Length: 537
Ligand code: COA
Image (tube, rainbow, N blue to C red):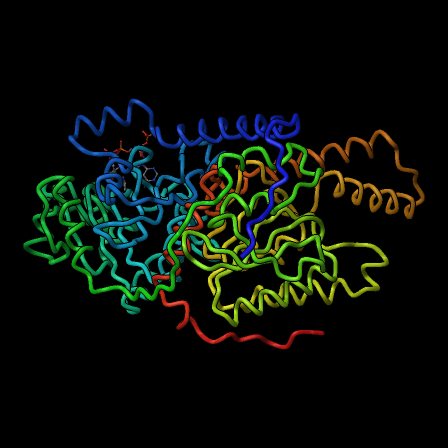
């Protein structure tokens, strides 16, 4: 396999300018992450200390293997929502090793609103479950939650992931043989109570954990009954009377020790690996910082990105001389064979056909796919339409939708229009969708949308016999651009769980390696034969 040549000039002005820009974006990302990590501030920290309790992140760190890595998912979920009172949507989720076993872990963060579930919390937890299920991984819940956030309760019934979907998922995963383990550290009420309720194995901390459908005040109000926390749902009561608690732990650390033992003793996994010995890229991944220009309208070569994330920087490019706005080829990431598709311009018919062919090939050879997005969309205009861009674009969307191998998507730059669909956007269920801090997402760019709106509105006013005022039109354009800019922001997207997190570009290889390792946990070969529908040729 040929080593990719790199033309990146690391002493050039462009490189240094791009690197400085990416580093400034990363500083912003790190500041936002730090804010999320410090949820609740000193007040919440003092409260936990006084109660002799660990916070969610400390529990998680102690649960994970010291030498294993952890891929945190959507750490900035809920960013800019709910008056920013729920950093990370009040929970931490991710994929990591516990007692040598890859698990999906979720932890309620009680530092804000008692670990109450906001709508974005429900979405984030259900997304973590989806990853566990697709990859055949056990789930471990570090539980302590006030249940539904009562101020947002109505939204918890919205379409899709909410209204108790997480409990149905727990039951279905358990039926599929995927262990559901819950470690309960504190008060878990109502929706919070159903997590251990639906788990296969529960550990509860003596004198600290309590699980009930309604706490003492509500029971008093509803039934006139007086009961203490411990009487109503304490760990000891559940261990000796109700049978909800399988293991009684003495404190947080003991619960984590028991949890690790439980995971270590689970039945053996279905690890069918076909792996090469991994080797690092030939080019320094640190240089990933200097590739994407601050102005996303300027082109860059996605091969420079590929060269810094794949083993040995080796890339076997497929049909290199055809449809050159899309780079396709086979490479290895951390010893796993993958098919990579990366954008080097808009998708023309030729590029879409090449992609369709390549996706089918990878699917037939049971090779997972990695999509590196920097896409303005499919080509528009008379020539493209007469050339059948709708047909060819649809073929690509068809191939992505029906491929049965695991797919992974990274938003490196722009992600616009149907290009987002063809390159395996969120709705196409990539096993992981990660974004770089310089990425942008939208149906089209703000200026293009503003221009479209102007043309449409001017025509409408003229139809009514009026004459559009240029100043009104300019105001309208400015409003549309501002709104598109606001919603194209990666923080807007990550807050709403449109991705699985914004990552440091230098961690792309490790993040993909973790996703591939997780995907291998459920036998790729057994994932079903390729099932394509009819491709409209
Ligand atoms: N929805 C929204 N906010 C909630 C909440 C809920 N379900 N439960 C707690 N909160 C808020 C409190 O108002 C408080 O807000 P503040 O920080 O702005 O003052 C914060 O969370 C912490 O609550 P507090 O009671 O001070 O903390 P605690 O650690 O002593 O107790 C609980 C935590 C969860 C035991 C307790 O708050 C509780 O019992 N909450 C109600 C749980 C419930 O009945 N849920 C039903 C869901 S259907």
